[in-house]
Length: 192
Image (cartoon, rainbow, N blue to C red; front, top):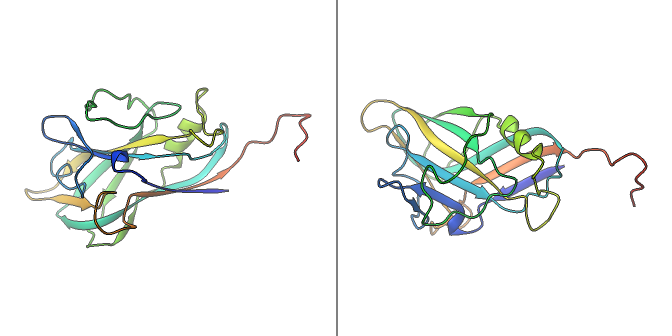
């Protein structure tokens, strides 16, 4: 099975601005990938991935706007069974990014409107759907949020800019594709 998610509201892609406060109203995610520890949060709603599923693959996709130099991003998930929508009161320490799984994306140079895919982040998503409080079975829940934090920036002027939900061009919101195998039904349960 496959879940294809996209950011569907302006409050689901957030950059943490210089004073450490969440900002949901930028049309690009640009200013926060210019220095080490700059971060962006991306939330996907209603995954409907059942708890205990086997995650085969997961890829985050961002539409590039511009790039310069070299940038690496660390990717983690919020350690929560259902991620609440970010608010302007959120700060880098207001969420639990304590997941064990993490990946590094050495982000290649990209151009305007290019679709750029992360390395496979299946281990990060697998960690979420194994949680005892994971709510993916419920169509109204199963929301999860990823943190993309700059872990290394090349020479002065290195940066990556990606489009966000608020940008005027429709269809350039962050996306994710997750391929999964649902768990078998409990023994003795009849499907139908």
